Image 1 (cartoon, rainbow, N blue to C red):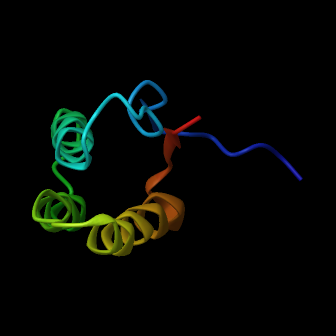
Image 2: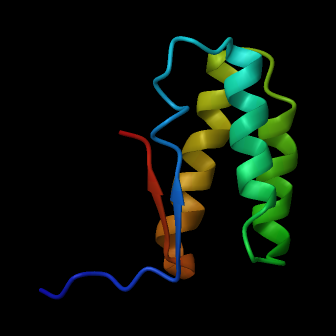
Length: 82
């Protein structure tokens, strides 16, 4: 089996598990970095818009799982969180 060829990489390891940030700060930084990706994909933009409105960890996790599914569905976005 060959290794996947990632079209884009997103490093969130400095934010994702950093307890120095509030939930809202983490969410906003992650959303900002996602918006900065060189992609005009309509589905990605919709996911990011919903992620930006997450009001707690449950609503964030729901959209985060959607983002991961999108990234693995041939879009080839590698997201580093640790």
